[in-house]
Image 1 (cartoon, rainbow, N blue to C red):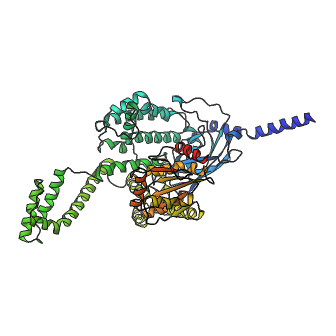
Image 2: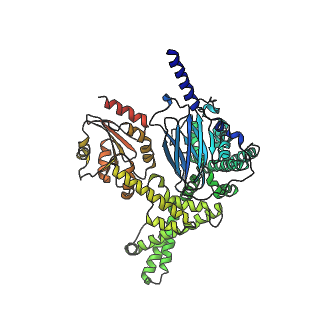
Image 3: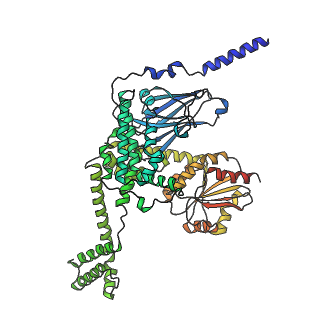
Length: 597
């Protein structure tokens, strides 16, 4: 009998082992790739969904949890932001993820755990399959990086996805900015020297792609990817210099780059945009190209959006406006004389005013101020347009399109609704798809907001007119005997929003336990935006007056900075308070300690 049981056991084990063995046709698929000489298909816009499915073979019970999810991160060119799509992993290791698209072809990231991280190209309306074997032996990566499991592909884009497993990009980035010499050089380089450094390496690695044994279209993809990363390094010059400065001088995070280290970026610096042909729609194949539109837009607005004038320059401009007013036929002779006198004093930076001049300024000052604002806006627009024409060339371009679109869609990934006035402006742009896509995302987001409102996972509270201790008592009266974490945040504060995202898994861990998460915003958060965002944040919400909020933060010496946090223990007393996000583990340790009391 024992022999029969043993034989059955061995047979069952053998069957299960065979069942979880990756089929040879998948493992050997790459050997059958043939170069048919075709080029990459033309990129275009699309609202179809791409599908990524596959399986993780030999996923052992201690490596699998019923709560495990596999993630896809795709950068949305309309918002410039990463969007995450998640799928549950079945007990047998299989998974399927649907990825809504904005373009027909795009690189995305597939992530499960430190061993599984794959870059792959997906196609709208098509399926890409990817497989991993947890038993594969892993070799250490250069620089001490965690080794990754080798992916195996089938379905759409097999030749492209196998080509992307090459280490050529890692080698390029190491040579360009990650080794010790590069870090020291980048900090010393002028903008021109830095650009020459990147362009030299760019040309070297573009030539290396031609020597790779991959298909023609895979070579084209790699050249796009290398160009994408070269552009990224050139756009991020100030950020990279700041990182190198902190690394060399061990400066704290956030310390600004010294003025003498800051690069001077003029239109000539940005000529790489045209040299690289970045305005080609094919660049949208690459992973986070949407970021670049936003980065140029930020620099553009930094140069022309809020130009600061020296006092003497300001006085000269206002003087000219009063001189112009003095020539107006609508003024009396006496008023013309007064206007000319004020103009002369402005030109000399003389701030003294006679009674007649004060009365004139009282009567015509607003008119002068409005004209000043209009002139400044016109000048900035003219200078800004000239800058963009020099950088991008004249005429229509994707850079110009997406700089405008991202102004409205910057938070489309955060479920913010694009308002009707913005949509009307988008409808005037050159592609009908832009407005159609934004309307579609608005409808999706509105539906998600409605679902979350009905889910009962978030609660809006209205505060009375009380302030300080009375207000705090009112807010905490329903949470006696519980640990309360108060998060002071604002809708416009990206560090606040990022911290809320980071804490979401921790909050789910405490679901059903004596822990309450209470989110407090003030009037600086636009009411409509706050109402759109809060349904996606589980917990209890208050939107207080600015004065009410200040009386609470003053109580704990927090000032007005956000994000700020206060943890109240089960005994109703403060256990911790500070400004700035300290990380999930910091808060978990305090909360766990309080729960044990």
